[in-house]
Length: 158
Image (tube, rainbow, N blue to C red; front, side, top):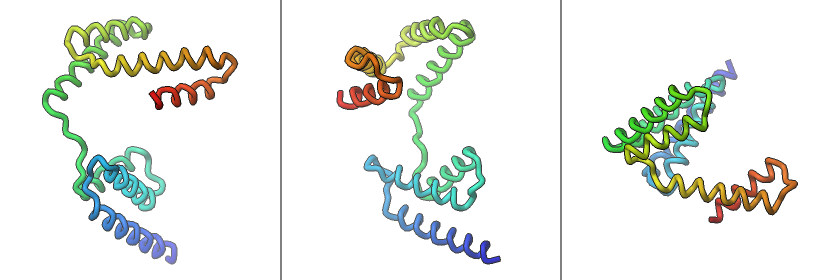
């Protein structure tokens, strides 16, 4: 009985603290949405410690909706672009289920024909590949973990 009362009191404190935190947040790009999501996640974990990821995700979504922070709503153009990308990737996977390189090439050509390949993804990938080659030549005896951290540092500063 004491445990039940303690859990109820703890939940009430968490809900009250979370409500006070959400009252002052606007959900803007300054990190308030992230803070609110963290508060919602901790509240959901306290309320149901045995919940799986799906249940926690749904609880956080509901909590954020109560706080007035809805998920992003893509425009119709963004939705159409996403559907076209998905169609290209699915077709490439179906055509080449065992060969990832060919599937990737086919998906890339399909997206280029549709005019939806963003240039910044290519630039970002090229920068990461360049950093990887620099790190490998500078550190030939480094482990995978060391190389990974050095590449992250290289990409982060560029």
